[in-house]
Structures are given as structure tokens and as C-alpha cells.
Amino acid sequence: MKHTYLTLATLLCNFSLLYSAQHIERFVTNRANIPLSSMYIKTENPLPGNPVVMWVHGMGSHSRRSKYIMNFLVERGISIVAFDFRGHGFSGGKRGHVNAYQDLLDDIEDVYCYYKSALNNNFFIVGCSMGGLMSTLFIEQRTTTPPIKKAILLIPAFGANRPTYQQWAAIAVGYSFPDYKLPDTQHSAYKDDPYVLPAVTGSIARELYLGVQAVFAGQQNIRIPIHIIVGAHDEVVDNKATTNFYDQLPYKLEKSYTIIEDMGHGISTEENKREVAQDIYDIIVGSVS
Image (cartoon, rainbow, N blue to C red):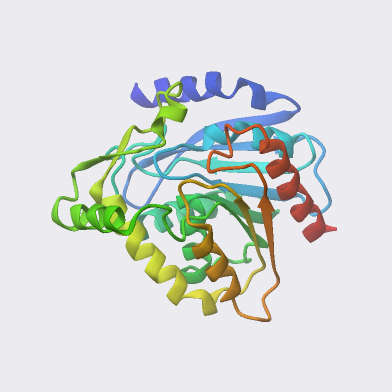
């Protein structure tokens, strides 16, 4: 009964996404036997190569927060696969908690394999904030056949724009009190959305820290093109860390970088989200044309 309620809720939440598209909601059971809420939005007039974006959301959020960008892409010939991490959004699992960042990579892999087996398309992975970090770890550590065509990283969480003492305090809580709830300082911007988490557990802070260490250590394993989009005034993610990551990518790797002026961290709520959507679209068109 719980799953039926969530499915109806997601359909109501995403009514606008039904425009010019076939929209399918389903739960994908991951390897930990946790139901992950997912959706497939098929465009009516696909671009050459039938591109599909796999959308990977950020910490405490859920995939439907980015429905404007999804709708923008679907209306222009790009289909969407999106899901909610365990403990997030409409998925099952302990709220705002993860035992290890590898569990989140498992979620990405399980959803990707589920849809890739049914779709003969060119897949692009688009990860936002924590989703950008996890998407990068995914392409560094996991092998997909055929490989994902390109990774587009939106405001990826390669470093925190917070005082050092605050970062270390959160990490310490994660090791000592992994179930302790840490309030999300950005939650007030999303208070109209009951599915955005007001807090996450200390374990996520710990695993983000470990994930950042791993993502820099594994850069030489990246074999697919990378495009990064950041906001010039991001108050959450440290853009210097993102620039360092970009500069340290393998020199032969195809890579590009967009800085959007007057944009902070909330790409799904800010006025210039159309500019973000257009940039994603242009990158995908340039990759399949």
C-alpha cells in the first residue's frame, strides 16, 4: 500500500512532465532489496542517436526537484531516466542515511543496468551536487557495457564552501555518531517540498568526505568525456575544488567547463535554470551529431 501511495504522489508531482512524452513510473529493487523510485520519460521526437539522460540528484533532495530541466530536454528530443537514492525522496530505506558511499554507487548501477537492458540508446549521466560526486565515482570505479557516452557534472560536490572547523566537526560526528541528524542549512529554500529532507545523518557527511578523497585519487581511471557546470556564486560547493579536479583530469581526456554568472547552488529553483538546461542540451547535441 505504501508503494501505491508513493507512485500516485509522484504522478501528481510530475504532471507537467507528461507533456509530449511517455512517462512511466516504477520501483526498481536494488541489490539491498530496497525499492528505488524511478521514472522513464520518453521523448516523442528523439534526436539522432536516441540520447537518454540518467539524472542523479543531490544530498537530501530527489530527482523530481529538477523537473524543469527534464521537461526542457524531453521537449527537445532527449529522454530521461531518473531515480531517488535510498533514503531519499520517494525511495525506501532509512531517511537521509547511507552506510557507505559504495551503496549509492550500487543504486546508480542497479538503476542504470535495469534501464539499459531495455533501451538501445546513448546514455549520458548528469549528476547534481552529491549526485555529481557519485556520478564521477561511478565512472571511475564501475564498468558499464556499452560505456556511458559522457558525464555532465552540475555543481559537483568536490569540496565544501564551509569553514574548515565546520567540515571537520561534521566528519567527526559521522564517525562517532553516524545516526545523528545534521540539519541541512539549505532546506529553507525548499520548505515547500515535503520530500526534501530537512536533515541527513552524520554517516553521509563521513561518506562524502571519503568520496571526495576517492574521486581525486581515481581521476586517472576516467575514460569518458567530462563537462562541468558551476555557479559563480555557489554558497555550498567550493568551486576552487572543482577547478582543481578539472585541471588534474588526464590531459588527453575530452573535457569542458561552464561557469554561469549570477547562479548559486540551487539550480532547480534559480531564475537562470534555463541557461543550465540549454548548456546540457548543447553538450548532448554536440556529442551525438
